[in-house]
Amino acid sequence: MSKRRALFLAGFLASAGTLHFAAPKQFDALVPRELPGSPRLWTQASGVAELGLAATIANPKTRRFGGLAAALFFVGVLPGNVKMAVDYDRKRKPLPARAIAWGRLPLQWPLVLWALKVRDEA
Image 1 (cartoon, one colour):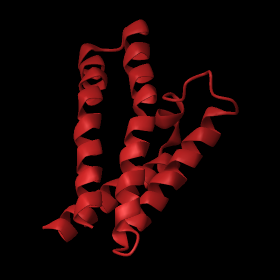
Image 2 (cartoon, helix red, strand yellow; image 1 turned 120 degrees about the vertical axis):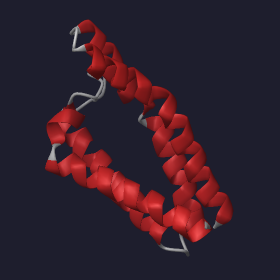
Image 3 (tube, helix red, strand yellow; image 1 turned 30 degrees about the vertical axis):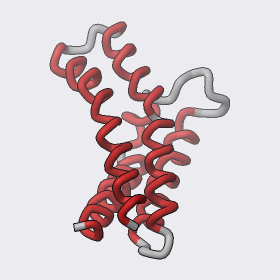
Image 4 (cartoon, one colour; image 1 turned 90 degrees about the vertical axis):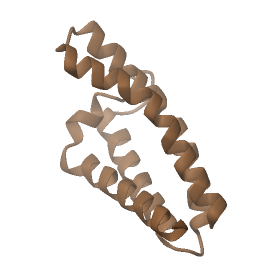
């Protein structure tokens, strides 16, 4: 089960990383204005980070480090998810979109726990 859990996490991260390049506009909107540089640069850097984390987790020799790094990454992107939820409220997006944006926030914690479980099982 531990190998499957790790490979599913690697697949999740690889999919998310790929989306940062295939559909970057949705990710650009998550980047806080306070960060230096363009939102697209942060979107691409985040996509590269997710692809790198996926590769690190997929490799049994680096899985322990990858699990910890992924957990820290999931904590690090939380402010962007908060920004999206607040922006959706301010812009009065349709209620289902706002509900999804706010509903995503508590889902960050299971992702952190998933990554830590992968680390612990490596």
